[in-house]
Amino acid sequence: MLGLLYRQRRLLITVISLVIIFKYIYRDTSGSSKAKPKPKKNHHTQHQSSPSNLKKFSSRIVAVGDLHGDLDHAVRVLRMAGVVDLRNQWIGGPSILVQTGDIVDRGKATILLYKWMDALRTEAQAAGGAVVSLLGNHEYMNALGDWRYVTKEDIETFGSAESRRKVMSTQGWIGKTWEANYSVTARIPYPLGFKELPRRSSQTSTTRRFTESFTEEEGEEESDPFLDAGTVFVHGGITPEYASLGISEINRIGHSLLHRALAGTIPYNHLPPHTPPEEAKLYAEHGPLWERSYALEDDERRICRQIEIATQRLHVRRMVMGHTPQFKGISSRCGGKILLIDTGISSAYGGPLTALEINYSLTPLSHNSSSSSWNERESVFAIQELADKKKLAGFHRIVNLTESLHH
Image 1 (cartoon, rainbow, N blue to C red):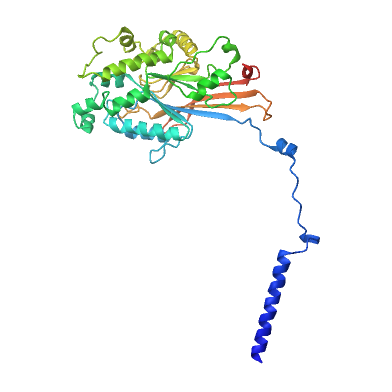
Image 2 (image 1 turned 180 degrees about the horizontal axis):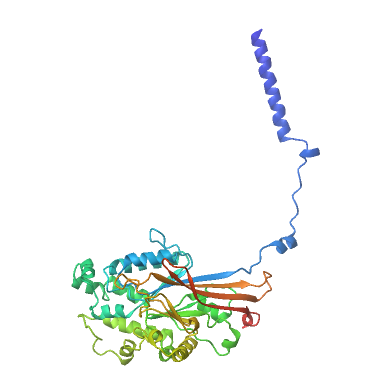
């Protein structure tokens, strides 16, 4: 009797389960359980509500002056500027970091600094950014064998003076990275990757050939409003005379002199024999490696005329320089056309830890894809440890690209 009741109970449970499954699979489509039909795609409405392809464009440049063998202070500066993390790896994303030369001498971390710059260059490129490295007079001095400012501790890190000389030759890794990755000067255009650029600016701004000249074609000055939207960086300074040569030619001469110095079998401690006059002139007092007039000239009107001519010839708004220490912090002259960023970062000088920041943006006045008016804004700041960020210069205008885009 109990067995019969057990079997009946099992049968009842099975029937109920089948009914539930049946209703789940073949549920009635009437009433509240009625399936809602999928809405037909309205392509017109979708197009109307889709985000506009006109988006705000922005870029950031960070520049750091002479480091002179001080890794600890260099690390503090780049962390402060937000381009490296606590592991000293790149976190700057698409930012561009410019170091204006004189990594070497006066300190003991030459090897570590150059290796770090090489590593950051690779990391920045992978993140869509860049590290732009310039040669200072002290790089050339070391290549030539002028070691007056080399410390004993620095030589010891290489093992010997002979080993140090070999590393700073055409066969050594520092000599090779100087030739491959360093230049005398660089021009950084602000609107890198901005797709709405007129043809000429677009070609220059997307190739990232920072060490080449930027010259307009006939008639383009009127049609392209971004021809001068950039900054030139150099260790000492570029006079109007050198500006007439252009960035490409300055770097060609500088590279030739560098190779000549690195290829020497013995330290010269001066220019190599048979150095061409153009190379000797580049290494002279008023060449781009040693020039100091933009920092030291007392006649403000005179120096502002000089920088006005030089920047016009180079198609830039500003010139950023190291070389001459500014112990009160980054200095600005002539409405921000002259920016002096060597503040004695190295402990050999004891100056403030600083970095220059240039923020640039282009914002569409309307998100309508047919709009061609953009709000262009450029802000230049001094970043200093234990101090508030200080605005040094700025530029603002409304740019209409209607005519420019047709050229």
